[in-house]
Image: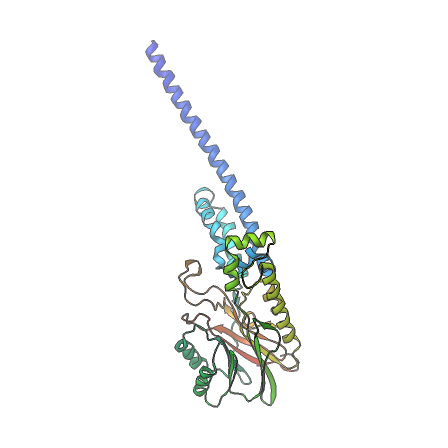
Length: 375
C-alpha cells in the first residue's frame, strides 16, 4: 500500500469515527432531552394539581391566586402546550400523564356536573335570577317566555323595567327598591333591604317573603360587589410591589390587596351569617361576583346548597357573555350567578340561559319542597 492509499484509508476511518461520535453525541442529547422532558412534565403536573386544589379552597389568600380565579381556567394549561408538542416527538407516552392534568382541570376544577333534571311535577316552582346591567333585554325576555317562571329576581335594575316584566307576567306582583326587584306570581307578604352589611354605603341584598300554598317562603336577592376595579388597580407593577412589601397605596379605595380582600371576606361572612340565621324556608339567588372556587364560594356552599351543583349539567358558566378570548372559546368562562337553597326546598333543575349577548347570563332553577320525611 503506497502513501496515497494510506492517507485515503486514514481519512475514511477518521470520517467514519467522526460520524459515529456525532451520532453518539446526538443520542446522548436525545436521551438527556427525554429525561428533562419527563421531569418537566412531572414538576408541571404536581404544581398544576396542587395549584388547582389551592385555588379551590384558598383562592383569595394571594393576589396571584385571585387573578387566576377570575382568569379563563385554560390559562393554567398554557405551559402544557409546549410540553405536549415536545412529548409528541420525543416521548409520546408522556401525553397520557399530560392528558390527566387536562381532564382534572376540565372536569374537577371547572366543576363539570352530570345531573339529569327531574321531570316537572306538582308543587314545584320555577325561579329566574338576572343582573340586568349591560344586558340584552330581548334575549332575556325570550328566555322568560320559554321558561315561564313563577318568580324573577332582578339586580342592578329599575322599577320601570320590573313593572314592564310584570305586565307580561299576568297576575304577578312587582316589588322594587334600590337596585333590587322581584316579579312574583305568589302573594308578597313582606320585603326589606338588608340594612347590614353595606358596601360603599349601599345594601348588597334584599329579602322578600312570599306565600306559597299558604306557607311562607323567603327569597333573598344578592348582588355582591364586582372585583374588577380593585383587581385592575392591583395588577399593575407598582400595585403588586407595594402590596408585596406592605406599603399602603395613597390613591382612593383600599390601601392594599390584603385590606381589600379582608373586607370582601368580611362582607361575605356577614351575608352568610344572615342567610344561615333565616328561620323560614328560603331560596337565595343573585349575582355573587365570585367564581365557583375559592374561600368566599366555600363560605356560602358550606352553609347553603348550590342549586347548580345539585341539579345542573355542564359547567353552568354565566359571565362574561360572548367574548373575543380564544382561551375561553369566545364565550363565558366564569360562574358568577347562582341559586342556593336553605332549609325546606331543594333544586331539581338549574341552568343558565343559552344566549350570550348579555354581560351576565340569566339563571333558571326549578325547586320542590322537601317533605317532612326528607323526600
